[in-house]
Image (tube, rainbow, N blue to C red):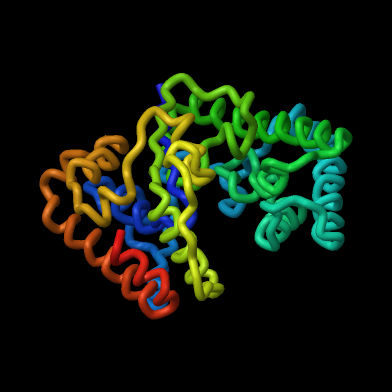
Length: 314
C-alpha cells in the first residue's frame, strides 16, 4: 500500500531548507539527489527538490514514455480554452485595476507557464504553485458568474489530474514524501479525493511570524519594503494558516526556529518516518537549524532593518 505524506510550508518559511534536511539529509539515499542543491548566500536561500518518490520516473523531462490515458488527454483538450479564458479575464482585471487584491504578477507568470509549458506535467507531479495562480487571485472577491462556473470546471480538471497521479502511485506501490506550500484542497480542488494512506502536516505561523515570513519572501525576490505591519487576529484566522485547518497535525515555526524546541522539530522527522536519524544526529541537526535561522536574521537586518527591530521586541 503506497503511503502519501505531505508537509505544507508557507512561501518564505524555509520549505527548501526543510526538504534538504528532513527529506534528503537522512540515512535514506535515493540516487544522487541527496547531494544536489543550489544556495544563495546573499539571501540564505536554498533550492532543493521537495519530493522524494519512485514516481519520479513519470516526470516529463525524464522521457520514460509515460503518457496519460485517453480520457485525461481528452479532458485536457476540452479544458484548455477554459483555462485561457480565466487567465485572459485576470490579465484584463489587472490592466483595469479591478478589485482582485490577491492577484499578482507572480500569479500571471505562473498561469502563463502552466498554459505554455506545464499542461502535460499536471498529472505527473505536484503542480500546486501554478494551479493556485488560477484560484487565489479570486480569494474574498466578487466573481462574475461566468468566470465562477469556469473556475469550478477548471478545479474539477485539476482534481482529476491529481487523482490520476495518486492512482498511478497506488497501482505501482510508490510512496510519496512531499513538501509544498499549500494543502491540495486549497490548490487543486476542495472536492479532491485523497488516497487511502494519506497524512498531512502544516507549519503554523502566529501574526509576528507571518510578518517575518512576508519580509523574508520579499527579500528573496529582491523587493524588501521599508516598513512591515503585523496583522491583527488569531493565528487560526490568518490567510497563511489555511492549510492548518485541513491538515492532520501542525508544527509551530516560532517553536522550531525561535524557541529552539527540539520536540517540535522532532515531529517533522517523525512525520517522514525518520525519527531514528533525528535522535542519532540531534545535536548536528539543531546546529544546522540554528545556523539557518541566524543567517535569516542577518539577511533581514541587512535588507529590512525596520523589520529586524520589530522582531527583537517580539
